[in-house]
Length: 179
Length: 457
Ligand code: FES
Image 1 (tube, chains in turn purple, cyan):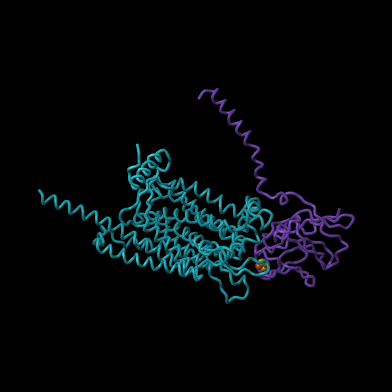
Image 2 (cartoon, protein in one colour):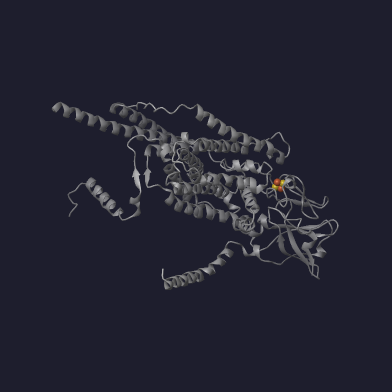
C-alpha cells in the first residue's frame, strides 16, 4: 500500500468516526431522564409530622396517575418514634409487595411473606428479605433536604428499587440534610 | 403468443414456470428444498421443524397483537379478554403458548441430536455457534413473552430477571434501568418491544446464517407436529393465572424451561453466581465444544468423553428442572418451603455428573463393536391396501373435523383444539400413506416394465 493511500484511509476513518460520534448520546435514550438526574420534589412540612407519623407519596410525581401509581415510584416518609426523618422505597426487596409502616411497632411489615424492616435504617430484620445477602436486604432510601421553612424535599434515591441498598457504605442520617 | 385456446391447467403451469424463471434472480434459489419421497427420520430436520414452529408463533403472535395492550394494568385484562371474549381468541392464545413450548423443546432436541452425531465439526462451526445463540434467544423470547401477561407468574419472573441483572458485576446497575425504565409501566412496553420486534428480528437475521443450504420440508411430519401442538393445547390449556397484586404472596413457579435456574437461585447461593454464571457456563461449554473436540470422529461411540458430557448435561437439566418445580408445603414459611439445602443440591449435581460419565464409559467398554445393523424390512403396502387406509383416515378426519366444529359451537374450545390436533395428526398420517402409495406404485410400474422388457428380449 502506498503511503498516500494509507493517509487517505486514515482521513476516511477519521471522517466516519466524526460523523458517527454524536450517536454516543443515543445511550441516554434508553434511560428515563428522571432516573438519572436530581429532581427536587416537596413532600411535606415538618409541621404536619409528629413522631410515629408517616406519609405515602410517589416520586418523581408527574401528574399522570398511571405513572404515579406505579409501585416503583411509591415511597413513605416516616418520622420515627424518636423524631428522625426517613424516606424509604415501598417496594419490598423480596418479591416487590408494598410493606406498610406500623407506627406502634416502628417497623415496616410486608403483607406478602412477612418481611420486617426497621424504621431507623430500612434494614430487614425478619422474613425472607432478612435472609437475602447484603446489599439486597435493605430498602432503598430517599435523600431528603429540610429547608429553613421546615419544608421537606426529596432530592434523590440511594439504592436500587426492588433490589437493595449498600447500607454499610452510607449511614441513614447522611441522607438527611438541613439547608 | 395467445393463451386463448389453452386450458386453465396449462395456464397455471405456464404462470408457475414464468415465476420460477424469474426467481432465479432472487436469493431463494440458494436454498435447496427437498420434499422427501419416502419416510426419513425427523431427527435429521428438527431444525426445519423448529423454524416452522417459529413461523406459527410469528403469525399467531401478530394476531394476538390485535387485542393485547402493553399497559401495566390493562395487559392482564386484555389477555383475559382474548381468552374469554374474543371469538377464537382462546385458541389463538393457546396456539401461541403451546407453540412456544414446543419451539423450546424442539430446539433442545435439535441441539442434542446434532451434538451426539458430531455435526458441529468439520466446517459446521458457524452453524453450531449461531444455533446455540439462537437457542438462548429462543428462551429469552419465551421469557419476555410470558411476562407480558402481567400475572403473578410474570411478576415472579420479572423480579428474578431484574434481580439477576442488577446483581451483575460492572454492567448490571446500568443495564437494569434500561429494561425497567421508570417503573413497571415502562417495563411492560419495553418487554413488548423486545418480544414482538427486537428479539425476533435478531433471530431472523441469525437464522439466515444458521440455515444450511439444503432444507428438508416433510409435510407429513409437519402436519403431525402441528397436530401434537394442538392436542397438548387441548389437554393442557394455557392458564391465565392470578393478576399480579402487590398485597398478595406469589404462589407460582416459573415456566418449565426456567425452573432449572430457579432451583439454583433457591439453593441459597449468591444470586448472580447461581442464576446467571452457572447457566452461562453451560452455554459457554456448548459454544466451545467444536473448538475443543477437534477429532475427525463423528459418531458418539467414538467420542466417550463428549458423549459423557452430553449425557451429564441432559441429566443435570432434567434433575434441576424437576427440582425447580418442587415446593415443600410441609414447611411453614414461604421461605422454608422454597429453600433448597445447598449441600444436598450441589452434592446431587456432582454425583449425577460423575455417575453420567461413569455410566457412559462403562457402557462403551461393554459395548460390542457395532455390527452392521441388520436392515429392517420396510413394510410395503399394496396400492389397494394404501387406498383403503387413506379412505379410513379420510372418514376419521371428517369425524374429527365435525367434532372440532361441534365442540367449538357449544363453547368447549379446549375440546375443539384437541380434535383439531387429532385431525392434523391424522392428516399427517394420510400424507404419509399417500406418499408411500405413490412411491411403491412407481416402483411396481418400473418392475413391471423391466419384466416386460426381459420377456421381449
Ligand atoms: S414480597 Fe415482601 S416479604 Fe415477600
